[in-house]
Structures are given as C-alpha cells and as structure tokens.
Length: 128
Image (spheres, rainbow, N blue to C red):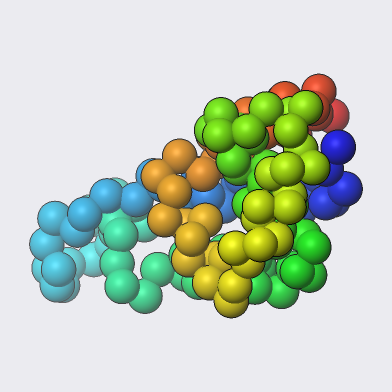
C-alpha cells in the first residue's frame, strides 16, 4: 500500500493534466494582445512553461521515498505491476532511482491517468 501523501499525488495529477493539455504553439511570436487571442497561449507548450517548472520543482522536493513511490504508483497505473506486486514495484523504482525522476515522470504522456489508475488500484482516489 502506498504511503506517499495522497494530497501530493492528487496535486501532481492536477498539474500533470494542465501540462498534458498543452499544444504546439501556432505562432511563436505573434505579438498581439492575449485578450484578443482568447488567451490561447496559456494552452501552448512554450519553452518557459511555468506549469512544467512548477511540477519539476515539486517532484524534486519530494523525499527519495516519495519519489520512488510516485514512480511505482505510475507503473501500477499503467499496468507494469499489479497492486499485489507493490513491494516489487517499489523495489524496482528504488533500484533505478536517480536525480531525474521529475523528467522521467513528465516524459510519460499519460502521467495523470497512470497516477489516477494507480490510486484506484488501491481503492484510493482524489475525490475523497
């Protein structure tokens, strides 16, 4: 059973959804007023994206144990391990742990879905 604070996981899920919703910029430097463009640049994946930086910073401030469990939870959510294999998932995540956990997790296109599924595998959710 995961011991990482569920509120932390749910915050990451929320931010990962914002990050995943980003699209390629239509026009790099169109110079018009954001209001006139219906604030579309908020949805564009720009190099200085504050959501990505906020997520990386948050994940990097987690303890090593929390980072390991977060990776293991994502693996359970994507089906690489079952909930009954939690100890094995954590052991493998600990074995491969390095200082690039945030980059690894943000490289998962369905991170928010994997974490939600991982929580659900243990009867947990962000709804409670």
